Image (cartoon, rainbow, N blue to C red; front, side, top):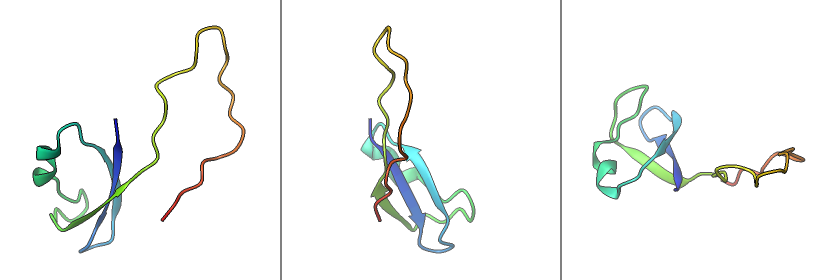
Amino acid sequence: MPLYEYRCKKCNAVFEKLVLNPAWESGLECPSCKSKELEKKISNFSNGGAESGKSSSCCTPAKKFT
């Protein structure tokens, strides 16, 4: 499932939202100022878990693209 990152065009707040249904986007608003003027970006996502029997250790942080 995609995790979207939104930036409010009014107050520049940035927040993430999991949008399972594209129709839900019409009801999204900025949690800071309640504006509906949002810019959508695709955000990083993660895999749900590790394979059984293997430990999950991480190496380097993911790069964030703008």
